[in-house]
Image (cartoon, rainbow, N blue to C red; front, top):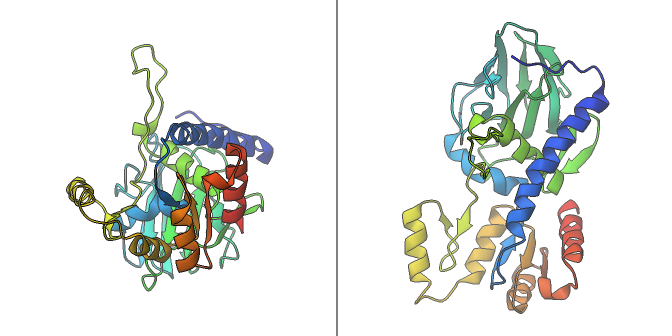
Amino acid sequence: MMGFFANDAAFIAALLARCLCVAGAGLWRRLLPLPRRRLALGCLGLALALWMVSSWSTAGSAVQFTLTDNPGRWFDTGVDVSGTRSLAIIGPGGEIQFSGQSSTVHTVTSLIFPTGAAGMPFDAGAGSTVTLETPGLYVFWCKIHPYMFGAVIVDDPATPELDLGQRITLFNGITVPTASDVALRLVRTFFLATNPGNWQVYAASAPATWDPSYPPVPVLAGVSGAPVRTRGEAIATLSAQLYTPVDWRACLQAAWEMGARVFLELGPGSALTRITQEELPEACARSIEDFNSLQGIGRWVSGALAG
């Protein structure tokens, strides 16, 4: 097993930042070619990226991570969640156990945790346990091998969808909103690092393209606002849209209940933006026709999500 032995936190931060830049670039390239269409996007940020993994929730009072030397599965729950075996979902008050099956030394150290979470930050090793009371996203890593990640979502079953918290705190003390570009890049990096199927192969015999996979993003049916989760549902609802009016108000209500607070209409026009402002006066809603540049759109979205 290859190891990076780093005592300098700046080196670790630089390594992580490099991973984030690579992960974010692929998303940006995919977003730019989108054709203009009458579509409003509820910018769910981090919650949107993880919404569908709730169907694989490991409900219970305890979860065990085994620290191993197996590539990509260094923090191994033994349960596959959308391609990774390093993510667990548990209720408030659940106990996380860390056992060791490794030929080297590893730490279990807080990388990300909900801002203000009880008992955080955490820093121990194999054989340790931690009880997580505060709902939200927790990511642990090894300080000796900074590519090792294990994540836990503490989810309150009384609330809809997954609880990721309003803000997360990074190991260096920086806090960011969970509905921010930084948080989304962190999640993308996690799914790249912990799923060997997402690793890019540079061998001459490897495919020229790199297309990593992530948890599916929820799509709302335009005719009803109901979530579309399967290929069959997508075919049925798209067919219905040929002869059924779009129920935009139902879509708005569903998106709001799922946590969307920022809406960007891709146009042409701004009719959907006006309806959004009338139906959801607390929401941030704009049309791209309000802006003169892509940079202006980006600044507004970033500010709205951070606010």
